[in-house]
Length: 88
Image (cartoon, rainbow, N blue to C red; front, side, top):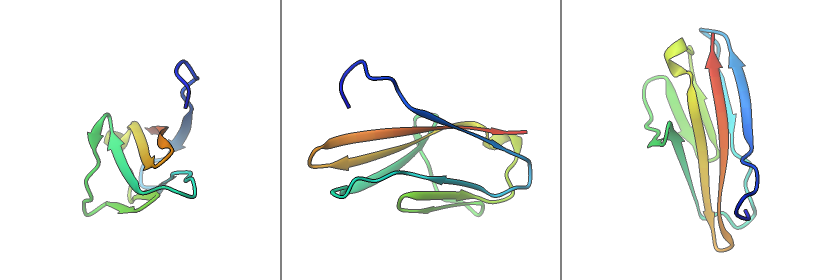
């Protein structure tokens, strides 16, 4: 995306105990997908499942509130989609 373009942030409000689902929009030529949470690589856990363009967090808790990001790389460049998650 061009420099200075507004960053798109999708907001999610989730209630504790609910399933949080984040889905990254993909271009056709995407080669890799990385998920970040507050700028750090998101790791799978017993509650967090990462399947390519989708992340699922089961039994959400307030501590899951964060800025998540999906970074996709392709021959035409990289894209980042941000997800602002608020569990309350």
